[in-house]
Image (cartoon, rainbow, N blue to C red; front, side, top):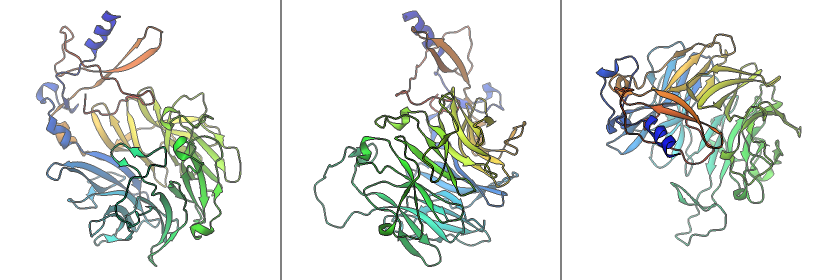
Length: 469
């Protein structure tokens, strides 16, 4: 046992470590430095314009002078070309969305008075950003209605102005990392009329509500909420429906999913009758969701039984669903043996194809009206960048790159590639590991090593770029 462990450690070589670009010879690149971490930029949140010609996305970078991370919204043509900044330096903007007619690009940013996060809008024909909402406490999320006249907003209850008092702990979940003590101020759904600037609360109660999704005809909004007697004691979230034109105290909520499992990420089929979503299949509600394998399901509104499209035989975690334009497939990210692929799941029979596969980690993705897919793709030697697959359901699934946000840095530093190593434990269980060798590695020499184990059993290390190695 001791020899096996020492041998394993000698293979997990991380020192002296460096990062870099695969296009240049390794001996011309310098080792990594701590400051390089703060120079890295991250790409996320792609959304394709309704005409399919543009993709808006975010780029986040560290601002050492302000000691914070700044996120800006950018835009690039789906055909390629130079990216265009849509928000200015000096303040953050996130959650880009296109108006249904494609004439406006919206996002969340700090309000003009600097007190809260509000929804802003840019006219694509020109002009400065316009603040759309002015909500006390700010907005936590939003989605455009199909006709472009309203926004579904997630707004948290505000603390009553009663002065300081004692902390009252009356729930199981009373404290959270990076937050501290929690209160009972809940996030609810509101509908904002863009022209009238009016706000209607459509949900209420001692529950959290999130992931709003408008039906294609705009008559209903699906959302996710755990409305059991003690939500902190279980993971039994369900999908519900509300009417956007009815105040919360007059609503008759419709419960779409009824299983004792965690259901979330609802998306509407274009027929307006079915909802696809991500679910777990256990009957136990006391198990943390992160310990369960999430599956893709679809249900017809009004039916009790969903159709499970990725079954227990596919022992892999799926998440972030998107319908293909014709509704025949659902795209999801699928964790698979140290990789994260973009998978297309057939609605008819659950058959899988993999538009983006291999030694990659796929992040956020979006689908264009013509079926083209754009996704953030990361590799061992490449931080996440936007890539396009023009024919994701065809036999050829070549992808082309749209962004190059870290090229300048990667062309100067050494990046270690990931090598897979598998071995059996004493009970015969096969363990998958990744080996990162130092710059100038010589197999005739021995090197010091660091063995890095992740905490918890519910996650995986993957082939995505990892600065720490």
